[in-house]
Length: 387
Image 1 (cartoon, rainbow, N blue to C red):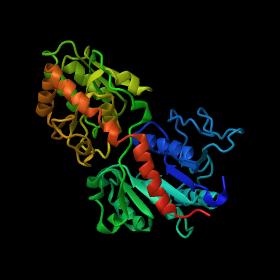
Image 2 (image 1 turned 30 degrees about the vertical axis):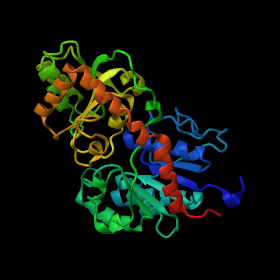
Image 3 (image 1 turned 60 degrees about the vertical axis):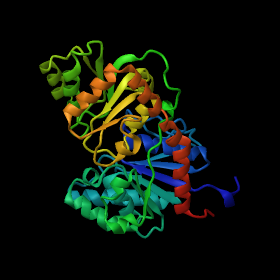
């Protein structure tokens, strides 16, 4: 490639590639930009398997080390100091971490840095001060969830004005930040994972209600378990499948026993190939209190599942669902409303099919090609001409 027309060198910075929504978006972006001719360097704090597997990764998936034959593949670097390099003490440790990350930027000299999430964004901005490398930070949730302490909110207010750009998933998450920060704001939603871009299943669906996500207080799987227990006697052929793990698992296992549905609720754990496993299910439910752009919801809709989601703070579900047309929105924490919508969909096959057909049309607006191209266009506008 002629150097005068080369694509930029981008450094993508995130704490890890462990299996979560933000990590998936970054992994997909890394692959897309690489396919478009960008030089891609991935900087993570840690290597934390099991991680997302990148087809063009230059590192070994089991050890995290760069392979000798990596060549022009995606490079991987780690910002956490090696064991024994941290002197102890919060301030001293911070200085060592700061110096190592700044040294990475100085040595690699990327044309642009894209950082995801909370403290990682703040570190990207602090460690590039004076290096003249544009930094784009991306907030992946609401301000209250991503910056859950006063100290972090103050640090974001102090550092974000130095960002070259700030990406939000929804207009509602953007609105929670000060006006000075919003002047640099860009809303770019998540794309559908390519694995979920397939034809809607037309055969007889499995009698399954599914949920995919971390078993924690924010995702609120307890609401779904209680609502399922409330309708389970009316629909004895159905099972609830919970994909994911988290701190509430044991509590939920006790709850399903208490409610008498332990034979009807399946804890699937963290699973690969989710698209294959839920493709034939009938109903998907998301019960979160706070959500940016929920990957699990957009993916379930793409597969044509009839979806119910809470109209949560962050605005992501409301961006995806027009209630009554391609899914249903319910108030946060409202078990009675969830029971009512479950009862409606479970009892009316024609309604399920209508919602299913309309839901699958999200593929038109949120395809990987469309959303990733929008990301590339935005990042090129920040990087400017590359010489």
